[in-house]
Image 1: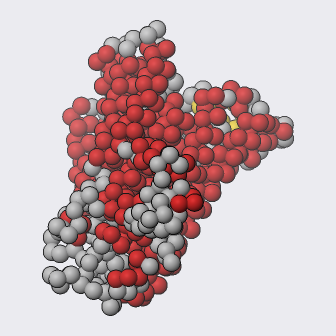
Image 2: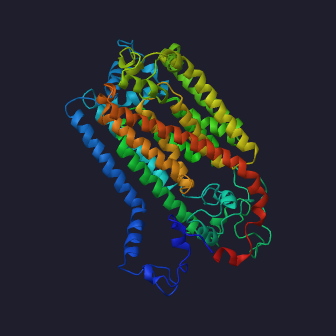
Image 3: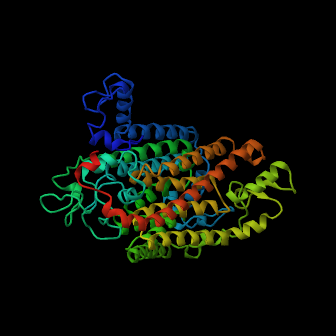
Length: 552
């Protein structure tokens, strides 16, 4: 008996005869499985189908981006900037490598960040914010186009199934909505080799083969099974991936509603679309993915987490390292030519002097100490670096400990990935789960903890939803909760927070607790990937039986 699920997209396409006699619930009684027109089921299904079309996602994208353009217009029409773009404008107007006249230097960011900072200068001082907003919009549109119109297409030799779905299903059973898709599209057995997985391609024990001698899901030399004449491009596996892309697109639209005030005003808004594109190609074309992620790392440091996950999980680690070295050499050569080589490492060397920023996860005890007036704890501005920090007994000790704790946490995450890899876990899943784990580690164990750091989580969640929207639902919802609580903190009620308002301290605590929950979920997920791999390998040959089983 097949287990239906709430996310049964592929089943709606691939199994028209799955609900005979279901007219009482709004479905036809003649084995069609289609909702009776006019019933709530038909209306709901029709609305869902419309929302999952790329056109609908683009409409949502346009509405949200037009809103933020209007918001920014309330500033740039007066010749003003918004939030950190005020600082960016000063740097841009001064020019590259100009003498620093205030406490904050553009070299606080990796050097390639100065390219997007300088680019809006072409619009002039008063319209700098307009040019900046349009630049972010264009980058987001490029990323959305790849998500909706390219990501679902299978690469040569790859079945367009959800990445790693089949081998995990051997242990967990079919995920909701994926059984019919596997049956109708000839999805591969877990024993068959994906580009990043272990093991030879072979037909499951007892499975019937096609006339040409291949198993129904097996890919012939140099081609994907779904690309064969027997599996046209409109197969349910491709349609399922298209729907996953739409779900990921809508998730990003909602995420932008909450954190657009940060992504449209920080360098993170430039790096995030590049990171998404890098992750999109990380498994299929590791050199392309590594190049994009290396460029993004020279804009903001956090994409190095994805590069590290690729180096651990993928076989092409030498190429990945060489790609990063080449990108870095080109960056250094450019700085040597333009000047400023003495500042190229400032973004890393100048972090040690910072204290514990207000929003950092490990600052939470001192936030409550300030709220309750314990031990002279307080929240105050650090004008030297333009940040708000916590002060009180033990803060300096914690600030000095967090740097080595961060390194230990990264090492622990890497060890967890290596353990899963040695146990035979799917390499593609490890890249995405490892990126999420390492990125969350960089946030949770960071003494800075700025609100814009939450933008770091968006690219990997989008790629995770694209490849396995069922199992990535939990982190996707957690990150939306993180985004919503961050929105309440900034821009809505940041002033009450810095004045030790207890309600806002509670909101900040919830946000930080959600970050820790995300960290624990991801660590547990990677542990399970390694723990179940031997069982998957043992049972993969016996999972499928001839023909009728999947249709039962």
